[in-house]
Amino acid sequence: MKSRERVGIAEFRVVRYPGILISYGLGSCLGIALYDSYRQQGGLAHSLLPGSCPPGFSGRPAKFVEGAIRSMFVELLAAGSEPRHLTAKLAGGANMFASPNAVEEDNIGSRNVRTGREILNQLGIALVAEDVGGRHGRTIEFDLATGALQVRSLRLGELII
Amino acid sequence: MTLKPLSARQLDALREVSNIGMGHAATALSQLIGETVELHVPCISVAEIVRIPALLGRAEDLFAGITLQIFGEARGIILLLFPQQSAQQLLIRLLGRPADEPICDELSSSTLKEIGNILASAYLSALGNLLHMSLIPSIPLLAYDMLGAVADRVLIELSREEDLALLVETEFHGRAPTEEVIRGHFLILPDADTLDVIFDAANVGYEK
Image (cartoon, rainbow over all chains, first blue to last red):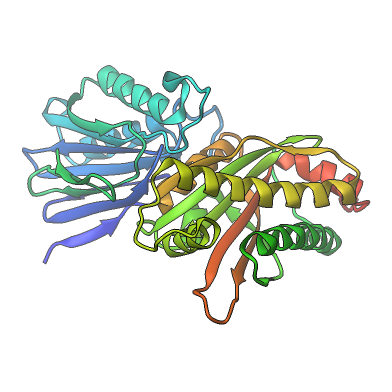
């Protein structure tokens, strides 16, 4: 029996095989999965905001996309992963409330996605798959046995990336 | 800016103005659907922003969410949430349409947005009159999806500067004996700065 752990908003978890990490109902929030297939371990984060933690910030690091990725990166290295073995997948970053006069690139969802790609790039982590943007919510389930990220939405059904 | 602890008098004042404001909103809704709408006494709580979706229900349940920003002398966000069945019921009663019709078309969206607009305007005009402030709602935006996804956009607005939010919430339901119950959540999330403005106007300052 695989244990399923829930990752709430502004949280992240790092676990080893055999585990499943799950995060429910992401809208503009970004889900970030990091995976090390050599050690079958990885992490999942559910982040709210683009940009990095402000100086002196003492809250949850995973509130920010940058804080989430860096925290998981540090924990995975501490758990024995080598940076070059890590791959990443992104899901979420939708724009739930269509506004008639908003610029698409300015919405929080898109900015979360952009920040995610930038930070992964800085850390040299390969982004191998993503299912981002659009106007729909997503629930994501990350299987540490295979690194597969299942993305479910009410309108578009199920997708594995 | 952080939320200061509220005194008992401030909580009372807030509950009272919200009660009156939401009462007006409920009256507006009852005129719209032609039946009595009952309202719970608003519940006021300070919650960690990231915990708010969990307080509202199951993250994957289908909800219609209508959000408006509050402009004027006080600022904040209004979020109205209807579970799918209630949204469906509202449309059946307002548009006289069959129950199995999907909600995603243009007419349904504008109708739900308009309901949000009417409720928010009723609330804000009552609140504004009471506090002698001019409060204006923005245009309503609609999302029809998983509860977690519908709520997170609104939380993101607030969470840029805050970790805690003041939540004024009520549940209302229509009760025509022969019809299905309509339920909804009405949430007001004022900016932290705005609270000072509201308390000044209601004449209950922070205790020295």
